[in-house]
Image 1 (cartoon, rainbow, N blue to C red):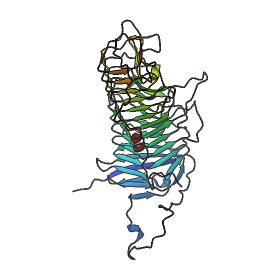
Image 2: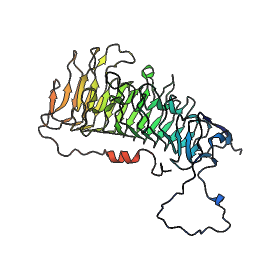
Image 3: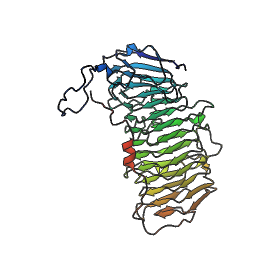
Image 4: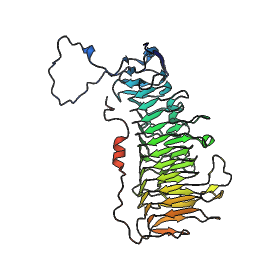
Length: 470
């Protein structure tokens, strides 16, 4: 049988200068006593098993490389300034072409550096981008021809960057289909622009997967009127012009910590058929917002606010959404940033407007000690006149801080919302109770669930062997 040989083109374009890679650091515990060399005399060092097939010692060496699917190429440990890497080629299912750091975390890109993936079954693992300069629109991009490509065990951090309200860039831009980002760390983006964007293409279902990542964006950028600037989301899937297109993206098992950004949308859903599951949101000011699009599932997530103002849960806009088996605890927001906000829609809404809520299902959730568990039929503008219809709220536990605190607020409209309530356990005050709900007179003391924020945190971000030591 003939072996398939494919060609991969890896180009590094130097914008400024390329620092020489630093000397390799000896691994191991410094307290371990030296071990006697027990190798046979005839065993050569070159016989030691490597995790790569080719080691690139200087990025100027990145040229035309003929490879086999399954080959691994490593970049030598070091710090590289203003490098644009174009990783292009085709692996095969079960035999990806892999680009790795010689040691995870020990290849660092600074300045105006970027990476583009273009091809199929390409894998990138173990790199760090520090303090991006925002002179281009992305740090990592999956190109339009990218499919079944992955970014794993990498980090982008902006701890030493300046706040920048002028230069819009995305750290991650995802085009193509069936691409994934997993076990990465993204920390402290300080310029305008969403951190990670899925860009939809006409007539193409994306099927991207974003999982087990650590996200933090504590800095909020303000305009001249001291209002948070729009466009500081952590993840956005789609946009208003593609919002009625099916994307089929999965966002699961990620940990969101102090993701304040624009203080409105932590995740901005702007397409159809996406799933958000088993994520943890810890002290994040904003909500997982189903802003545009229909038929999305929000399940198994954990939102905890520790009574911090503006920490929220889920905002529902559009049709056929399901919010089930989530836990909302000690959230400090209300209105759009309530633990659950069901929004009033617009008549003949434009694609960038507020679609009416229809056929929503909210079931088997726990709301515990939030400032406001549910704000229903809420509107932010006078043009929002259509109340939710054909909506079900079933089998939820909805518990206020105490008997004098509001647990549900309903805003009246004409006509009123069409909502059925079944088998909910409710404790607390209800504002404008047109539904004549049954209220428990005693606060439950033990509200157990399978949610565990610490487990979500521990499984997210770069792997334990990822090192930032020099």
